[in-house]
Length: 293
Image (cartoon, rainbow, N blue to C red; front, side):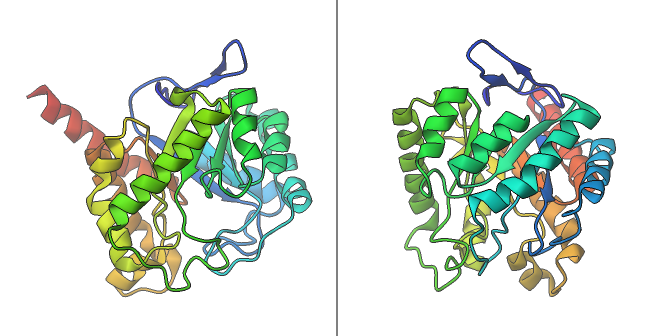
């Protein structure tokens, strides 16, 4: 369950509920087995390349591998469940055969059919960028299997989310929307301790919205639900740093990871594991030292 954490360790309890134990922030490594993701599309769509990337991330200290078969970049077209399953299931099965249970696996999808196939293949966690809105059956699936679920906020769909997004009070509006997703999950039977939330940086947000959310991460932490932060290589940071190539935003991403740790964020979804593992560990050490004073 998300109430307890332990780096690179998982176990199944009675009823199929997964437990993650420990305290330190978790690094979730992104593995997009897609041809069109914004930063690494096509790089890991082959099985061998995907497994090599998993081995690299493991060597760099990853805790969770987040596998997605559908790009959620702005303007992306939806991908059918059958196609997503064909992309992700062989990779999940190969990871389990290769490294066993040494790493947690999350399935990045909004569709219950894909989530079920991924869980059956060995995934541990559901990561739903729609917050359970795209396919509410995914909430019932999480309840039935006991799989933890991450509920993210997004405005619109990936195809339309950057078409003029607008908020009066982005922090409160995102909190309210996440609360609706939480209540829907609880009503479906998902246990409170199996829910985490994600403010959805870059998903239907303007630059100022993303900055406002990052400046108030403590309000999301204050909900009592574990928070996942996903800023990795996001375009809004490129406008600040005056770069256009996503791969040049590794340092910028690590800065947000360190800030997130200080705010109490527990999980960080990133492309670059080594750099963000270091940023999280140093920030965590500073935070622990301050607590001991």
